[in-house]
Structure formats: C-alpha cells, structure tokens
Length: 351
Image (cartoon, rainbow, N blue to C red; front, side):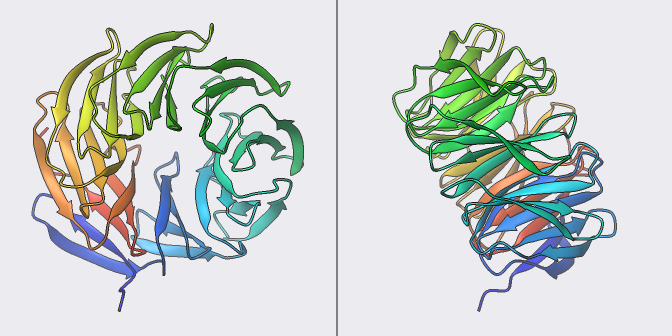
C-alpha cells in the first residue's frame, strides 16, 4: 500500500516533523510562489495541490483535468497559477480559493510546460504537437500559435523583461520568440539530441540549455549564437539552474552526477558525486551558495557550491524527480514518483 503523504523534515537531524496528505500517483513537478507562502504540486493523479508553507497544511486540491498534470507556473503576484496537462488543456486557478477560473483550450496534444511573463499578463505553453501558444491571462483568450519546431516542445522559459520566450524541443533545437508579436526570432542549432530544458541568465542576455547529447550549451540571446559547449557529463543532462548572480550554473544528469560551471569561461568547476542513480532535478538557493539535487535514488542532497561538499542527504520513499527552493532560502519542496511531497527546512546547516 502506498502512503501518499507530505512529510516535513528537519535536515540537520533527519527528524520528521509533520506528515500531511499527498497525491495518489507520481508528483510531476513542484513550484513555490514568489512570496514564499505557498507551494503547488502537480501529479499524474490528474490533480494539483496547494500547500501552505507557513502553517504546514494542505490548502486545496485542484481537480478538473482529465489526464496527468505535467507542469504549473505561478503568477508573479502569487495569486493565480496556470497548469499544463496531458488532456491538451491548461487551467487558470485562484490559489486563495482553489477555484478554477478558466480552461484554456487550443492545443491538439498534451501540454508539457508553461511559463508566465513577469508582468503576469501572458502565459506561454509548450506542447507535444510541436507548437507553443500565447495566452492573454486578463481576457483568458488564446493568442498567437507559435509554429516551427519539428518535434515535441519540452520546455519554455521567458526572459526577465518578458519580451522573449525560449523553447526547447525534441527536434534538437531551441527557438527564440518575440512574445509581443508572436514572431520567431531565431533557431538555435548545435545539439545532436533532444533538448530537455533551458534556463535564462538573470540579466536576460544569455541562456543555458540541457540536452540528451550529454552536453549543455551557452547561447547569446541577442544574436542566437552559441557561446560555448559545456562538456563533462557522460549521459543525458536532465536539468540546469542558474545562480542568482548569473556567474555559475548547476546541471543534473542521468550519469548520477551534478556539475558546477563557471559562466565567465564555460569551464567545469567541480563535479558533485554522491547519488547512485539518475539525477532528475536541481535548484539553487537564493544566496547562490548551495544547491539541492533530486534523484531516482530516492534522495535529495544539499551541496555547498564553494567547496563541493555534500552537506546533507534526505532519503525519501520513492524516486524524487523535482525540487524547488523558496525565496527565503530555507524551505525546500520536492516530489517523488509514489505521490509524496517532501517539505524540508535547511536551518542549522553549515554552508
């Protein structure tokens, strides 16, 4: 019997503090609101759950999707969220009440990812039907259909100024899009396998992509040119995160390692070893000093990025595929393939 729960842990001692209800199937993603007060988890059980990170309680279960929920984006004001589902739709939710505000229809196949512009006015969704779509969140209407990829679009990110979207696809390319006009600006070619994800440097000038060809690539978003290829992983790179100061990147790979990269040179700084299976997700604390990695070995690991030291390991009950760090730098949320959502505190740890 699967005990699908949310567990609150104090990492320095491994002591379990609180256990709350959870999902009934794989947790596909977790997101923390910008205000750090709530988190939202998505699941193959067709629901989302909203969690109060202060009171350590479940606020609501959001139902309405008819297939797995693959991703969620939370608005900059932390009031609403947009979910992406295998039922070909997105849904707009009020996080305070748990009410469904609208269903966004238009994709003809599963929706894999969604991002919201910094002004909260527009959502960009990515689908397995090779397209992206722009959505006006004020009028809850479909905007421009972004066509050009040759295979499923796996990820999308938006620059801090909200003007450009970057999409990553199974067709081995990334594309740059003008969000206001819905125009394709450039196609970024160079990977030899699918592109799993993309992260934009905080200044909005460059981006890092993670690929199944075992590499990351560093791109100039103004020109579309490749700045460097980051080599060192020996298996697919699953995830990448950028430090808030934009000086370093951290990558996760199916080769069981995490790597830290210098974005002034593109050189590898250190390889973080300790996981025994594929690493599926990575996040960096707001101070840029530590990283959290999520692995199929059922653990979350905390790393000191200055020394490469493993500071702590949390062992869950199932393969952990996602993680996020709150703005306070203390709260971590992760989700596993048994439906559990893990809520951890980082107080008291060295580093």
